[in-house]
Amino acid sequence: MDAKKKDKLATAVIYILVGIVVLILAGILGNILITGVPHLSWHFLSSEASSYQAGGGVRDQLFNSLYLLVLTTIISLPIALGAAIYLAEYAKDNWITNLIRTTIQILSSLPSIVVGLFGYLLFVVQFGLGFSIISGALALTFFNLPILTSNIEEAIKGVPQDQREAGLALGLSNWKTIRGIVLPAALPGILTGIILSAGRIFGEAAALIYTAGQSGSTINYADWNPFSPTSPLNVMRPAETLAVHIWKVNTEGIIPDATIVSAATSALLVIVVIVFNLGARYLGNKLYRKLTAAK
Image (cartoon, rainbow, N blue to C red; front, side):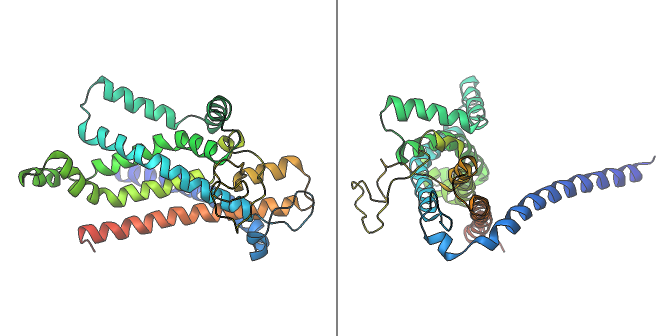
């Protein structure tokens, strides 16, 4: 067999393998969306979940998921940004840096259930925070930090070295060069990494079962005092998220329309994650074109 035929054969095999992956992904997403989207409605999104009666919604679970996402991002972003800047700009290439990167890779591959058990033992039991939003946010921070740090580091490393040298040639210090030249140029990639990690946080369940809890307290959306027990902003209240709600509905089997609720909640979760991913691509490309004047 000559080289051209080998090349065509290899290309055909690659296309077949890619097609199989696409078909599997389309089948999974299609099944979830086709099953769940018809049951999505404004009533479902804006009403409270019912424990024993049919017709409940996921208002509180949706709010809890978004609130946990915001808190986790607020906690993890400064730490990840600082670690990424150090690894990309200041750390020397030695065994210590290699050990740090290896540790980050190991942490990013930990099963979420292990992170959840760690969060339960440390935050819920040892620190006495109980099953609460803050316990869930701290556990998700440990879950999110390795991935977010790696994404930001890669975005910073993607900035051409010429831009750093130009800043240093103008008399700027290393930190001013990073702050005024490198970080703005890396901003599209950083935002893409943040949004992609947000999608993963939003769909997390195992780590939250042991930290944020499996049931939520009564929420009064007219009370925005964060220290009130019924306030939606109270970080010390237990909170059930969308992903945990799916698991709970299917395991308990108390709700008469559990199948419908589970399908609709799964579809909502998938739609939000897809929006996160598409938003990351759109925002990253738009910022890249704006900052680099590329067409």
